[in-house]
Image 1: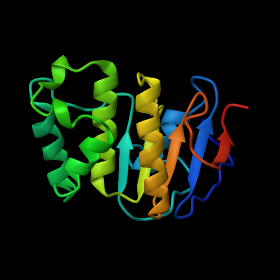
Image 2 (image 1 turned 60 degrees about the vertical axis):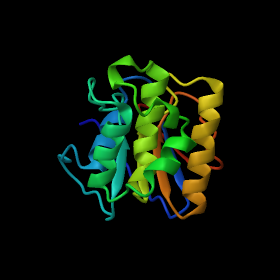
Image 3 (image 1 turned 180 degrees about the horizontal axis):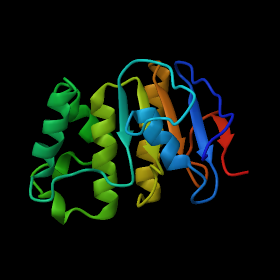
Length: 174
């Protein structure tokens, strides 16, 4: 059994940081919360939309970035939020670039823009700063702070501080 006795609540405006060594279950817990995995026991409660960003930004290599993000935004009824989300993550200028030509950091920022544009109250982020430079990390910090100020919630798996103000902490693999 990977988890036993894990219990937490994230309230509107709150954040939970998952810490632990590789293989401790951080990514698996996020996948459970996203509904991508079924729990073997226990339950996960809480409704509402969730935006999940795993290790892969799930971008179509041959599509221009703007088209790819518009596809996801349409699914989330977020086309009106997409321009601001792309600007917030500094990818608006890359809209015409095929995703296969984006750097790792640009792909990560694009994935974060998809999360921002989703309008989901709960963001599930797996190592969201992976591949980001310091300036891009600050874009994430600003977007996360705004999301929380608007009553949104964040659960993030991390290997270090990602700039979330006063998060709850859950250590796995102890």
